[in-house]
Amino acid sequence: MRLILVRHGESMGNASGVMQGRMDFGLTPLGQRQAAATAERLRKEPIHRVLTSPLKRAVTTAEAIATALGLPVEPEPGLMEYDIGEVSGLTGPELRERYPEVTAAWSRGERPRFPGEEGRDVFGARVAAVLETLRSREETVVAVAHGGVNQAVCRLVLGLEVAAIGRGGFSVANCSITEIVRDRTGGLVLLRHNDVCHLDGVATEVDRG
Image 1 (cartoon, rainbow, N blue to C red):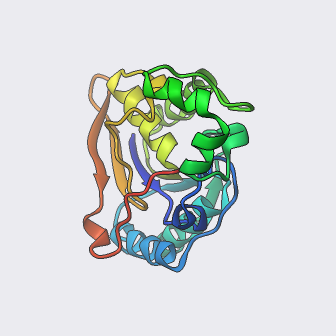
Image 2 (tube, rainbow, N blue to C red):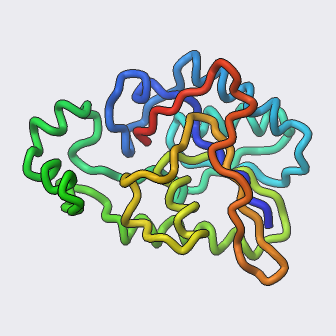
């Protein structure tokens, strides 16, 4: 098993500085260039399948990669971004103004939920189910997802709490590549994370899903 995780290209939501969650933004022109550069980077890889989150920003990125590889795109709902509930579409200042008690608790290291939020336990179980399905396969898979999903996969592989996502440790640039493989004992290994070597001059580090 070899899993190549790709975060989607820069979206309209990234560029406007909002918390995206499940909001379905498309790519910016920069995001489209990032997707094309990623497709060119992966063109000669021995890839068997291209999976994607059903959200538009991921699908468009996956389509660029799949076209370069001559493969179909396969939607995988388990790769959707974390649902942040009612704060979707808010900027940082708007979030702090509307939910001061929650953001104050975050600053103390506490993790209360916003109204309508998916829940980190549910999210972690969802991502873990996708990872468990893929680890049993003898193939190389590209999975186009989101910052939160890529962070969750890294934490699961390293035995860290998925609930701690958002507290730092795993930067995920737009169209960065993270690679997971299965070793001879059946364990999963994080080979590389946030690889942006193919994005010279077009990399963006903003991580809002």
